[in-house]
Amino acid sequence: MKSSTTRLDRFISKHSAFSMADVRLLIAQGRILLDNVTARSIHEPVTKFTRVDLDGVCLRNAASVYLALHKPAGVVSATKDSKHPTVLDLLQHPQKEELHIAGRLDFNTTGLVLLTNDGKWSRSLSSPESRVAKVYEVCVAKPLTEQYITVFRAGIYFAHENITTLPAQLEILSKYRCRLSLVEGKYHQVKRMFGYFENKVLSLHRVSVGPVSLGKLQPGASRRLTALELAQTGYK
Ligand code: URA
Image (cartoon, rainbow, N blue to C red):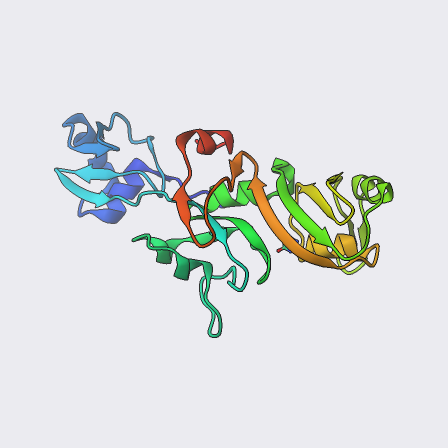
């Protein structure tokens, strides 16, 4: 993974008239602030979201943004679309043009979509290695049986990608309704898993991603993630 962290002396030489060699003196004179604290070493890391001030002038102040949105049906999980409204169209946020989606939903799928400008965070959340559970409520056309639980737990072979799905947990709620928990997000994964049984998904709704739940968020509405949710998603 490419690191978005730069050394302080490199950052200052790139964003001011000072050279890398000048930075030690600037630090000794207490002229550089990182996130409003006086810098102490040229080795201090500067991330995409570190606020950097030099002689009282802000060189960079890009706040990180983490949002939860309730996607309604008929909205595209993309930042641009020529025909349909996109999840970005539903946001009022001033930095919305910088945001990307951490785990898309299909056009008619509803529920929780996370948006951020922090690529490291979204990659970690989407990576199967992170084992972050994505929980869906699913309605299907044909009755569910115990066999689904066994097959989903064992994994299903997808010939097109030559992969077997990771173990998934299925809870049968009624004859046609269930809750499915996945730790990965392959293309149309839920529909294809039920497709294995030739059972059509009639509605699909994502209720949570890791510690973040949709809760009472209304369709089309969004909110910032809380500090606790961010800490629980491994944000540092
Ligand atoms: N799986 C699907 O098939 N569709 C979605 O939107 C999400 C997961």
